[in-house]
Each structure stands twice: as C-alpha cells, then as structure tokens.
Length: 263
Image (spheres, rainbow, N blue to C red):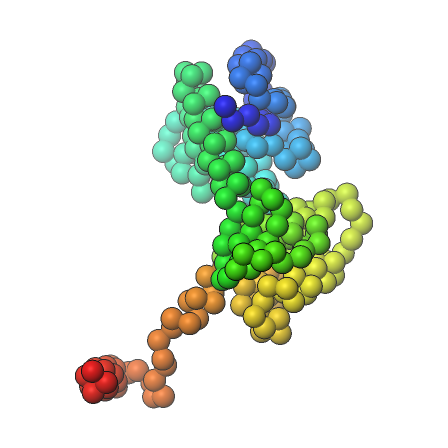
C-alpha cells in the first residue's frame, strides 16, 4: 500500500476528526488545519504528498490556498472538498490547479480510493525520473546518466535539475526556484540560482553558451525544454524567400522535384 503525508484543511470539527482517523488507520501521516491561513502555512512548510482542501474556510478560502500553493511551485495533488457543486465552482478550482473535486456529502471509501490513486500516480512518476537528449535522470538512485555513464552532480545541481525536469515547458521564476531548491529559510540570493544553473549547464548542455535544455527567460527565470534538441534537429529547412501564398506553391513544387531527382 502506498503511504504518504496528507494535509487535511477543513473547518468542520467532526468531519476533520473523522477524516484524520480514517487516513491514519490506513497508515498515512496526517496533518490538519481548521482555517485557511494555518492550512496554507502547513502546505508551504511541510510539503505534503496530498492535500484535501475545503473551499469555504475562515481567513483564507480554498481557492486562494490552491493559487498560492501552485505559485510557490508545489506540485502535490490537491483534492477539493466542498458542499458547492455548481459547474462554475468546479471549473474555477481546476483552473487554479486542483486535481480533482468531490462534493459533500461523499462516501469515505470513494474519497480514500481517489486519494490512494493520486498517491500511487505521484510515487510512480517520482520513481521514473526523466529523460532528455542523451541523458537519464534517475530519482531513485539520485544520479544522472549520459548513455549509461554517470555524470557527477553536486547535491544542489541534482535538486535543481530534478525541479526543472518535473516542470517541463513552464516559466519558472527565480524566487520559486530558490524556495523549492534552497529552502525559504536559507539566506541566499537569486544570483545563487544563476551560478548553479551555469555549473549545471556546463555538464548537460551541448553548448553551454547557447543552451538547449535550460533556457533563460529574461527578467523572469528559466524554462526547461527536454525535447528541444530533437525538435531542433527535425525542423524543416527554411526557404530563402518569404512563403507568401504565391511562393508557397513554387517552393513546395521545387522540393518535390528535388526529391524525385534524388530517387
């Protein structure tokens, strides 16, 4: 059975107590909060594997918690619990980063089954690691390989690469990278991110001065593009003249004629 750390943010005492007892009996570590402010603080500091989140909460509602958690780069599954079942509420929650939605009253068995499914999926994804170009990132062994040979990384470089690999194609702000990789309590600056990116690029980029995988976003941070190199190799040749509607036909005909001559 997959076990994990579950954070339950719910303001109804009886329901909160019942959910805590249920998940604790299944072997999970359970954290609880009865208002949105306490729930958000626990989410950011304890980094649970799964969050069960009520929407109508004192101080900070569930929508704002969901928005803040995703803004800090945390990717744990969020299952929203609410008595509000209107379609617009569901859409808003999902658009803010929630992974699923269950309306009260619900069957406890169904909720446990959904939570376990998310935990299995998350643990499975974490164990698989990531691939990009000639590299394989193995999260289980905490190692990076290039064509079967290990590429030595420092602990910080590995955590930074793992953070990038878990968020392909996304714009990642330097502050969020600092919080996730260095930790909010460490006194470092955004230059620490840039220096670590520079040393990591020297180890994984075909040309560190013209990066392929770890791309810089001016005034923002970075974006990881694991398929950029293969995509670049397969890109079609650009014609020397503009492809207006008139030239497009002529260019296509020239290409087909050249292909027939080669055959």
